Length: 319
Image 1 (cartoon, one colour):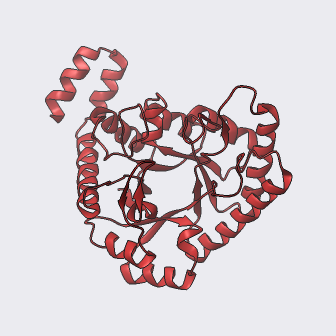
Image 2: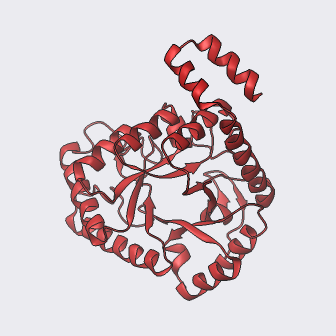
Protein backbone atom coordinates (compact mmCIF):
# COMPACT_ATOMS: atom_id res chain seq x y z
CA UNK A 1 0.00 0.00 0.00
CA UNK A 2 1.29 3.46 -0.90
CA UNK A 3 1.97 5.88 1.92
CA UNK A 4 0.27 9.28 2.14
CA UNK A 5 1.90 12.70 2.33
CA UNK A 6 0.84 16.33 2.06
CA UNK A 7 2.87 19.00 0.31
CA UNK A 8 3.89 21.18 3.24
CA UNK A 9 2.91 24.41 1.48
CA UNK A 10 -0.76 23.39 1.70
CA UNK A 11 -0.49 23.40 5.49
CA UNK A 12 0.70 27.00 5.49
CA UNK A 13 -0.76 30.15 4.04
CA UNK A 14 -3.62 29.39 1.64
CA UNK A 15 -4.51 32.06 -0.89
CA UNK A 16 -5.34 32.68 -4.52
CA UNK A 17 -5.21 35.82 -6.65
CA UNK A 18 -8.21 37.31 -4.88
CA UNK A 19 -8.41 36.09 -1.28
CA UNK A 20 -6.32 34.85 1.63
CA UNK A 21 -7.95 31.87 3.38
CA UNK A 22 -5.32 30.76 5.87
CA UNK A 23 -2.49 32.67 7.53
CA UNK A 24 1.15 31.79 6.98
CA UNK A 25 2.39 29.18 9.45
CA UNK A 26 5.82 28.36 10.80
CA UNK A 27 7.43 24.99 10.11
CA UNK A 28 6.62 23.91 13.68
CA UNK A 29 2.97 24.88 13.19
CA UNK A 30 2.78 22.93 9.91
CA UNK A 31 4.11 19.79 11.59
CA UNK A 32 1.72 20.24 14.51
CA UNK A 33 -1.20 20.52 12.11
CA UNK A 34 -0.06 17.47 10.13
CA UNK A 35 0.16 15.41 13.32
CA UNK A 36 -3.59 15.83 13.81
CA UNK A 37 -4.47 14.27 10.44
CA UNK A 38 -5.46 10.62 10.74
CA UNK A 39 -3.64 8.15 8.52
CA UNK A 40 -0.99 10.59 7.31
CA UNK A 41 2.48 9.07 6.90
CA UNK A 42 4.59 12.10 6.10
CA UNK A 43 5.16 15.27 4.12
CA UNK A 44 6.50 16.43 0.80
CA UNK A 45 8.87 19.17 1.88
CA UNK A 46 9.45 22.38 -0.06
CA UNK A 47 12.90 23.70 -0.89
CA UNK A 48 14.18 26.21 0.04
CA UNK A 49 11.41 27.30 2.46
CA UNK A 50 11.40 24.21 4.72
CA UNK A 51 15.20 23.93 4.85
CA UNK A 52 16.16 27.26 6.40
CA UNK A 53 17.00 25.45 9.66
CA UNK A 54 18.04 21.89 8.83
CA UNK A 55 18.57 20.95 12.48
CA UNK A 56 15.04 22.01 13.37
CA UNK A 57 13.64 20.13 10.37
CA UNK A 58 15.40 16.91 11.37
CA UNK A 59 14.10 17.25 14.93
CA UNK A 60 10.52 17.79 13.77
CA UNK A 61 10.66 14.76 11.49
CA UNK A 62 12.00 12.62 14.30
CA UNK A 63 9.63 13.94 16.96
CA UNK A 64 6.54 13.40 14.81
CA UNK A 65 7.68 10.14 13.21
CA UNK A 66 7.01 11.46 9.72
CA UNK A 67 8.59 10.20 6.52
CA UNK A 68 9.37 12.42 3.52
CA UNK A 69 7.90 11.47 0.17
CA UNK A 70 9.99 13.92 -1.85
CA UNK A 71 11.63 17.33 -1.78
CA UNK A 72 9.73 19.81 -3.93
CA UNK A 73 12.23 22.25 -5.42
CA UNK A 74 10.64 25.55 -6.39
CA UNK A 75 11.89 26.39 -9.87
CA UNK A 76 9.91 29.62 -10.04
CA UNK A 77 11.04 32.38 -7.72
CA UNK A 78 9.79 35.90 -7.26
CA UNK A 79 12.40 38.33 -8.52
CA UNK A 80 14.46 35.91 -10.60
CA UNK A 81 14.27 33.51 -13.54
CA UNK A 82 11.45 35.57 -15.04
CA UNK A 83 11.80 33.89 -18.45
CA UNK A 84 12.00 30.37 -17.10
CA UNK A 85 14.57 28.44 -15.13
CA UNK A 86 15.52 25.41 -17.22
CA UNK A 87 14.82 27.11 -20.55
CA UNK A 88 16.30 30.54 -19.79
CA UNK A 89 18.27 31.93 -22.70
CA UNK A 90 20.80 33.29 -20.21
CA UNK A 91 23.55 30.78 -19.53
CA UNK A 92 24.29 32.40 -16.17
CA UNK A 93 20.73 31.77 -15.02
CA UNK A 94 20.77 28.14 -16.11
CA UNK A 95 24.04 27.61 -14.22
CA UNK A 96 22.45 29.22 -11.18
CA UNK A 97 19.51 26.80 -11.45
CA UNK A 98 21.85 23.80 -11.65
CA UNK A 99 23.77 24.94 -8.56
CA UNK A 100 20.53 25.54 -6.67
CA UNK A 101 19.29 22.05 -7.49
CA UNK A 102 22.61 20.57 -6.38
CA UNK A 103 22.09 22.23 -3.01
CA UNK A 104 18.56 20.82 -2.91
CA UNK A 105 19.91 17.32 -3.63
CA UNK A 106 22.43 17.72 -0.82
CA UNK A 107 19.62 18.80 1.52
CA UNK A 108 17.46 15.84 0.46
CA UNK A 109 20.31 13.41 1.13
CA UNK A 110 20.78 14.98 4.59
CA UNK A 111 17.31 13.76 5.55
CA UNK A 112 17.59 10.41 3.75
CA UNK A 113 15.47 11.23 0.69
CA UNK A 114 16.43 10.09 -2.81
CA UNK A 115 13.74 11.89 -4.80
CA UNK A 116 13.26 15.54 -5.69
CA UNK A 117 10.47 16.97 -7.79
CA UNK A 118 9.85 20.24 -9.55
CA UNK A 119 6.97 21.82 -11.44
CA UNK A 120 8.45 24.14 -14.11
CA UNK A 121 5.39 26.39 -14.18
CA UNK A 122 7.20 29.49 -15.38
CA UNK A 123 9.02 27.66 -18.18
CA UNK A 124 6.79 28.29 -21.17
CA UNK A 125 5.27 31.11 -23.17
CA UNK A 126 2.24 33.35 -23.50
CA UNK A 127 2.39 34.43 -27.16
CA UNK A 128 3.30 32.97 -30.53
CA UNK A 129 6.89 33.69 -31.62
CA UNK A 130 7.73 34.64 -28.01
CA UNK A 131 9.99 31.63 -27.40
CA UNK A 132 12.59 29.94 -29.55
CA UNK A 133 11.40 26.35 -29.08
CA UNK A 134 14.43 24.77 -30.71
CA UNK A 135 16.92 26.58 -28.50
CA UNK A 136 14.74 26.11 -25.42
CA UNK A 137 14.69 22.32 -25.75
CA UNK A 138 18.47 22.39 -26.00
CA UNK A 139 18.76 24.58 -22.90
CA UNK A 140 16.38 22.34 -20.95
CA UNK A 141 18.26 19.18 -21.99
CA UNK A 142 21.56 20.71 -20.92
CA UNK A 143 20.19 21.90 -17.55
CA UNK A 144 18.36 18.72 -16.56
CA UNK A 145 21.28 16.56 -17.69
CA UNK A 146 23.67 18.52 -15.45
CA UNK A 147 21.34 18.18 -12.44
CA UNK A 148 20.82 14.45 -12.99
CA UNK A 149 24.56 13.87 -13.38
CA UNK A 150 25.24 15.32 -9.92
CA UNK A 151 23.82 12.21 -8.22
CA UNK A 152 22.47 9.31 -10.27
CA UNK A 153 20.95 7.79 -7.13
CA UNK A 154 18.56 10.69 -6.67
CA UNK A 155 15.50 10.68 -8.90
CA UNK A 156 14.46 14.00 -10.43
CA UNK A 157 10.76 14.28 -11.29
CA UNK A 158 9.24 16.79 -13.71
CA UNK A 159 5.67 17.62 -12.71
CA UNK A 160 3.98 18.52 -15.96
CA UNK A 161 1.06 20.93 -16.36
CA UNK A 162 -0.60 22.49 -19.39
CA UNK A 163 -0.77 26.11 -18.18
CA UNK A 164 -0.64 28.61 -15.29
CA UNK A 165 1.07 30.95 -14.82
CA UNK A 166 2.18 30.66 -18.45
CA UNK A 167 -0.55 30.38 -21.05
CA UNK A 168 1.29 27.31 -22.29
CA UNK A 169 3.78 25.54 -20.03
CA UNK A 170 6.81 23.92 -21.66
CA UNK A 171 6.09 20.47 -20.17
CA UNK A 172 2.34 20.19 -20.70
CA UNK A 173 1.55 16.48 -20.96
CA UNK A 174 2.70 12.99 -20.08
CA UNK A 175 3.75 12.37 -23.67
CA UNK A 176 5.81 15.55 -23.94
CA UNK A 177 7.48 14.88 -20.61
CA UNK A 178 8.29 11.25 -21.43
CA UNK A 179 9.70 12.23 -24.83
CA UNK A 180 11.83 14.95 -23.26
CA UNK A 181 13.15 12.64 -20.54
CA UNK A 182 14.06 10.07 -23.17
CA UNK A 183 15.88 12.75 -25.18
CA UNK A 184 17.99 13.65 -22.13
CA UNK A 185 18.77 9.97 -21.62
CA UNK A 186 19.31 10.10 -17.85
CA UNK A 187 17.78 7.10 -16.10
CA UNK A 188 17.12 9.15 -12.97
CA UNK A 189 14.95 11.71 -14.83
CA UNK A 190 11.22 11.02 -14.87
CA UNK A 191 7.78 12.47 -14.24
CA UNK A 192 5.45 13.34 -11.42
CA UNK A 193 1.96 12.45 -12.52
CA UNK A 194 -0.33 14.97 -10.82
CA UNK A 195 -3.77 13.54 -11.54
CA UNK A 196 -5.32 17.01 -11.42
CA UNK A 197 -2.90 18.31 -14.04
CA UNK A 198 -3.57 15.24 -16.14
CA UNK A 199 -7.33 15.81 -15.98
CA UNK A 200 -7.03 19.51 -16.72
CA UNK A 201 -4.85 18.71 -19.72
CA UNK A 202 -7.51 16.43 -21.24
CA UNK A 203 -5.73 13.17 -20.44
CA UNK A 204 -7.14 9.91 -19.15
CA UNK A 205 -4.89 9.62 -16.06
CA UNK A 206 -4.70 5.81 -16.14
CA UNK A 207 -3.50 5.96 -19.75
CA UNK A 208 -0.97 8.67 -18.85
CA UNK A 209 0.36 6.44 -16.08
CA UNK A 210 0.65 3.52 -18.51
CA UNK A 211 2.55 5.67 -21.01
CA UNK A 212 4.98 6.99 -18.41
CA UNK A 213 5.56 3.51 -16.98
CA UNK A 214 6.11 2.13 -20.50
CA UNK A 215 8.86 4.75 -20.88
CA UNK A 216 10.19 3.92 -17.39
CA UNK A 217 9.43 7.51 -16.34
CA UNK A 218 6.58 7.09 -13.81
CA UNK A 219 8.46 8.27 -10.71
CA UNK A 220 5.86 9.88 -8.45
CA UNK A 221 2.13 10.62 -8.04
CA UNK A 222 0.17 13.62 -6.74
CA UNK A 223 -3.54 13.37 -5.89
CA UNK A 224 -6.25 16.04 -6.17
CA UNK A 225 -9.24 16.71 -8.44
CA UNK A 226 -10.84 19.44 -10.56
CA UNK A 227 -13.55 20.03 -13.16
CA UNK A 228 -11.04 19.88 -16.07
CA UNK A 229 -11.40 23.65 -16.57
CA UNK A 230 -8.79 24.76 -14.05
CA UNK A 231 -6.35 23.25 -11.56
CA UNK A 232 -8.59 23.80 -8.53
CA UNK A 233 -6.74 21.41 -6.18
CA UNK A 234 -9.96 19.85 -4.93
CA UNK A 235 -10.35 16.71 -2.83
CA UNK A 236 -9.78 13.44 -4.76
CA UNK A 237 -12.95 11.90 -6.14
CA UNK A 238 -14.97 15.12 -6.00
CA UNK A 239 -15.52 15.15 -9.78
CA UNK A 240 -13.89 12.05 -11.27
CA UNK A 241 -15.03 9.01 -9.30
CA UNK A 242 -14.53 6.41 -12.05
CA UNK A 243 -11.30 7.96 -13.32
CA UNK A 244 -9.80 7.58 -9.84
CA UNK A 245 -10.87 3.96 -9.60
CA UNK A 246 -9.37 3.22 -13.02
CA UNK A 247 -6.23 5.15 -12.04
CA UNK A 248 -5.70 3.15 -8.84
CA UNK A 249 -6.48 -0.08 -10.70
CA UNK A 250 -3.75 0.66 -13.24
CA UNK A 251 -1.20 1.82 -10.69
CA UNK A 252 -1.35 -1.66 -9.18
CA UNK A 253 -0.97 -3.20 -12.64
CA UNK A 254 2.07 -0.97 -13.16
CA UNK A 255 3.49 -1.98 -9.75
CA UNK A 256 3.37 1.50 -8.29
CA UNK A 257 2.32 -0.06 -5.00
CA UNK A 258 5.02 0.48 -2.37
CA UNK A 259 5.69 4.17 -2.78
CA UNK A 260 4.00 7.48 -1.94
CA UNK A 261 1.00 9.58 -2.91
CA UNK A 262 1.31 13.27 -2.10
CA UNK A 263 -1.66 15.63 -1.85
CA UNK A 264 -1.82 19.13 -3.20
CA UNK A 265 -5.31 19.96 -2.02
CA UNK A 266 -6.40 23.47 -1.05
CA UNK A 267 -8.68 23.57 1.98
CA UNK A 268 -9.57 27.24 1.43
CA UNK A 269 -11.95 28.39 4.18
CA UNK A 270 -12.70 24.87 5.45
CA UNK A 271 -10.75 23.57 8.45
CA UNK A 272 -7.45 22.15 7.18
CA UNK A 273 -7.41 19.08 9.45
CA UNK A 274 -11.03 18.24 8.64
CA UNK A 275 -10.32 18.60 4.93
CA UNK A 276 -7.33 16.27 4.94
CA UNK A 277 -9.02 13.72 7.21
CA UNK A 278 -11.67 13.45 4.51
CA UNK A 279 -9.02 13.36 1.78
CA UNK A 280 -7.27 10.39 3.43
CA UNK A 281 -10.57 8.59 4.09
CA UNK A 282 -11.78 9.01 0.51
CA UNK A 283 -8.41 7.96 -0.95
CA UNK A 284 -8.43 4.69 0.96
CA UNK A 285 -12.07 4.12 0.01
CA UNK A 286 -11.34 4.64 -3.69
CA UNK A 287 -8.37 2.30 -3.43
CA UNK A 288 -10.61 -0.31 -1.79
CA UNK A 289 -13.19 0.01 -4.56
CA UNK A 290 -10.50 -0.50 -7.20
CA UNK A 291 -9.44 -3.66 -5.34
CA UNK A 292 -12.99 -5.00 -5.60
CA UNK A 293 -12.58 -5.37 -9.36
CA UNK A 294 -11.87 -8.95 -10.33
CA UNK A 295 -8.81 -8.59 -12.55
CA UNK A 296 -9.49 -11.74 -14.57
CA UNK A 297 -13.02 -10.58 -15.30
CA UNK A 298 -11.80 -7.10 -16.16
CA UNK A 299 -9.26 -8.58 -18.54
CA UNK A 300 -12.11 -10.35 -20.34
CA UNK A 301 -14.18 -7.16 -20.45
CA UNK A 302 -11.26 -5.28 -21.98
CA UNK A 303 -10.85 -7.98 -24.63
CA UNK A 304 -14.56 -7.84 -25.47
CA UNK A 305 -14.67 -4.00 -25.40
CA UNK A 306 -18.42 -3.98 -24.79
CA UNK A 307 -19.10 -0.81 -22.72
CA UNK A 308 -22.67 -1.85 -21.90
CA UNK A 309 -21.54 -5.07 -20.22
CA UNK A 310 -18.55 -3.33 -18.62
CA UNK A 311 -20.62 -0.54 -17.09
CA UNK A 312 -23.17 -3.03 -15.81
CA UNK A 313 -20.37 -5.05 -14.18
CA UNK A 314 -18.80 -2.00 -12.53
CA UNK A 315 -22.05 -0.74 -11.03
CA UNK A 316 -23.10 -4.20 -9.93
CA UNK A 317 -19.81 -5.02 -8.19
CA UNK A 318 -18.69 -1.66 -6.86
CA UNK A 319 -21.70 0.54 -6.17
